[in-house]
Amino acid sequence: MSLQNVRIHHTAIVEDGASIGDGTSVWHHAHVRALAVVGAGCVLGKNVYVDDHVVIGCRCKLQNNVSVYNGVTIGDDVFVGPSATFTNDLVPRAFNAEWQITPTLVRDGASIGANATVVCGTTLGEYSMVAAGATVTHDVQPYQLVAGTPARHLGWVCRMGHVVSRDTDRPTDARCPQCENAAMTPSSHPLGG
Image 1: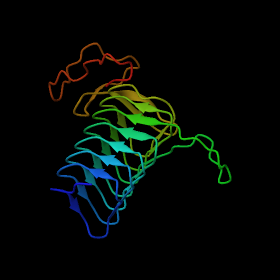
Image 2: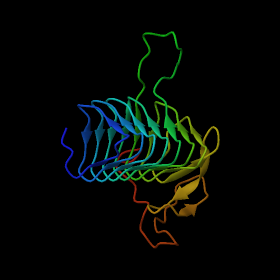
Image 3: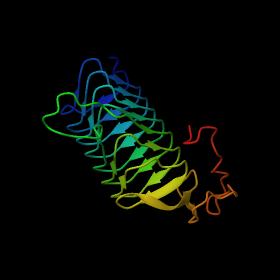
Image 4: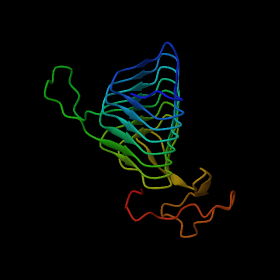
């Protein structure tokens, strides 16, 4: 593990075999397990837990108390709010020794609000936005805004996160009236990326 230009607080634990990218900060009491990969320019806040085999892209911000478990892959420029968590077992039982990891994918630019829960087996599309406290139980489309428990469609956002439309269908005019970005350019992949 190369730790050049990496800031690791003395109370944090970064296990041997973890990969931490250049310019990343790992703050108080965070724990990064062996075989985890964290990209360059990331911020892992207080008490963040990154399990083994997790992949986190570059320039991501994981706020205090976020838990990211084995099976989760996070793209670049993703924001994860305080105390958000990911699951990785669709049928959790304490006594099941043969449980299987169900993967979760968070695509580039997505944002997940504070205290949200992302149930495993879902994909969060590029630049999607999950509201604080939401429980994501199904895929979220690129640029889609979801909220509630279970999370439901509330609208569409631009690349900067401004609400562009509250319609059910994705708007055909991709220009945001607030920031003027042509921000909802569809990806070739059905869930972005």
